[in-house]
Length: 151
Image 1 (cartoon, one colour):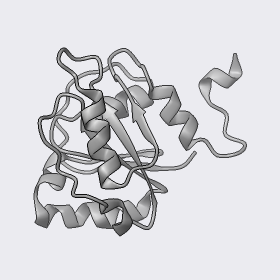
Image 2: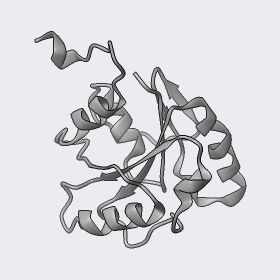
Image 3: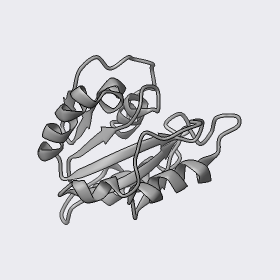
Image 4: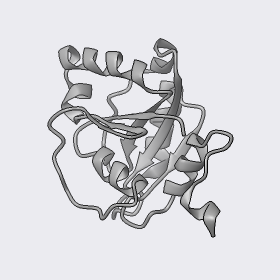
């Protein structure tokens, strides 16, 4: 399985997505530092919101095979500048989170991610599980066995 680092602003759903991808119960937990979970690196939103802390994201991205830029479907703005993905020498995917929330504007968030340079964009709800399997499938490498393969 390819290792992914999840980046995005505070409360965009990085930790909830981490829990959903690991098959855990979704429970709010404020991420205080960078957490490594097997093939997932969960990062605090403050690291994306602060240019000095953002340097740590650049360094930690070297530990991953894929960079996941998250944008909540409930956000009213984006942190990502146009064409930022060209600055990364890893595959970068866009992940629109919280698509199940009232007032969600998934296409707006997807547009921001496309503008940032993301070619592949996934739409997910960590609460309902919608879209989580598609991300896991994208991270699969030849020979990987995922839980639904065993059925």
